[in-house]
Length: 427
Image (cartoon, rainbow, N blue to C red; front, side, top):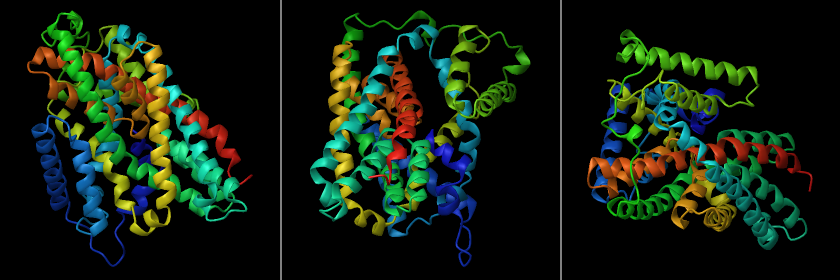
């Protein structure tokens, strides 16, 4: 989700995907074929390991190695045209997600939202402790190490708990006071955090899915009739608008309305939050069928396109940048994960969630959408041995993960980062 904001705002896409004047652009067909090969391998590994190694994690490793070694040119993803497609269709997919969640399911996720808020606070507290303990090591200065380390704490909190918007807020504040290293720090975190979040979340969701499968077989977990795959798939739309083109038209109108509301409110009501709510509301009123894009010819390609968004930042990672900030990066990830696990597990347990589900909810702060959707679906497919089991498990996991991603990345993190970013350079 947040990589889309990079496309809209420029950022890494403009810098990383524009060929050097002396370089010829990569053949679009070749780029498309290479990307599809990477995803085919990643999907194969995920299925063989029953999602222990998620497709996102495997693809991230392949792309990272490819970009670092120069095997993949920096403009690979842009040349494939998938990034441009993803920037267009991601809103469509989020409306689709909204139609996968019933209004009752959405109402039940207030606990998930609280866990997400606790996660952001946990990251901030953990990184503050890291800054107090290792302040001089972070900056290389004993005299002002602790003061300058707080700048890294603010930058790290914004990046670990959120995405592009939080990173841009930190960058603007840091560059405004001439702190270039602080501006680079959150970008590196944003580029690398999926490598941490994907495998950890995959392991936790596998455990949760196994528990839910046992509950389903014991009769303690029942798939609601309204969400049964065999349920009626009709909607109130006329038949002309239920074709592939007609469906994309009406969903596109909803996305445009969401963009309009975002612009009118100056981003206070985020485009993707509004799109999700529209999807839920239109499903509830029967205007859209459940899983509105399900069954249309273009859904598969749209899904692959938005997955590619995850890997865009990896094209900009430079070994020299990573080595220069290796110690702060290590501390940020180590203490950040501890903060996420501790706060999310505690609050989740108090609210009646299992510890694996609670920590998985917290880890959504490291990647957001589309990882929240892909990892949930992979976990359900890896555990379920029948379509009914897969549907029942996904029905329990997916709404939590989707709401978690919005509560951490899109809402809480932006608010917290906006408040604390003003402290950069003031120490």
